[in-house]
Amino acid sequence: MRAVLLGATKGMGRALARLMAERGDALFLLGRDREDLARSAADLSIRGAAGTVGTAHCDLLDPSSFAPALAAAAQSLGGIDTVVVSAGVFAAQEALEHDAALRDRLLTADFTNTIHFCEQARQHLLNGGSGARLCVFSSVAGDRARKPVLLYGAAKAGLSHYLTGLDHKFAAQGLKTILVKPGFVKTSMTADLPPPPFAGEPDPVARRVLRAIDRGTPVVYAPAAWRWVMLVIRLLPRAVMRRIGF
Ligand SMILES: NC(=O)c1ccc[n+]([C@@H]2O[C@H](COP(=O)([O-])OP(=O)(O)OC[C@H]3O[C@@H](n4cnc5c(N)ncnc54)[C@H](OP(=O)(O)O)[C@@H]3O)[C@@H](O)[C@H]2O)c1
Image (tube, rainbow, N blue to C red):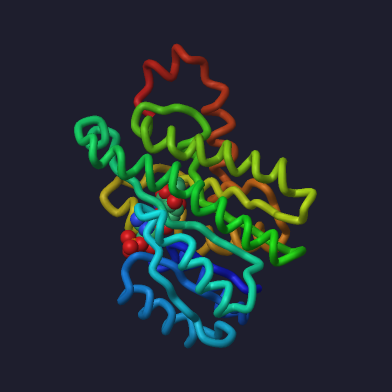
């Protein structure tokens, strides 16, 4: 694989990048912190990534950084066949309700600009011919509106909708879209939150996601149990959703 990863300096993205490095994929990292990128690239090289692991600055809050970052990746890798977007922002519902600037950043990063990035990535992938894969981390929070993740979930619901549509529109042209729906996973993003039942770890999640990328599975819940948890939650009547705090 010749893969570009946005958001692989931490959490699930880092676990996934390490698995890809260990099997000898060629990797290029995008992110906003140059030192983190350099450290992560060195780590992936030691783990077996093919060739040099290149890096480029790319900030989800700065769409002008997208085109140069993807162009640098395409040049370094000699074309891109896989793009993974695990970059994302989370904030507590209470904080988002009271802080309009934080709300704007989260909605812009997780919805608008992730879509802008994917639109540019899609063009690189379609230019690369067959075997193209776009894997993007959304969330189970987008499956049903819930009080504790109302705003974050709204952004992820929109993102999931977009990715589902990409699959419908571009599958016939050879683009495989892999929509990842993590449940609660223990990463820096959730470090301040009490883990619920079925909380997962980044490594098993990464193994599940990589299998989905290889197979071109359109939707993957990770950990797997969240598929059934969300099935039940989607079936709950509105009156119940109004009463419960989940
Ligand atoms: N953990 C969970 O329970 C959970 C559940 C559902 C969905 N998700 C989603 O899964 C994805 C990965 O989550 P995670 O838990 O692995 O998160 P994480 O450990 O916090 O890692 C997030 C990554 O995104 C990058 N990032 C954040 N803001 C960015 C920006 N403006 N521009 C570029 N990169 C940026 C971070 O880089 P920096 O070091 O620069 O911040 C980091 O590499 C996210 O989309 C998240 O919403 C997570």
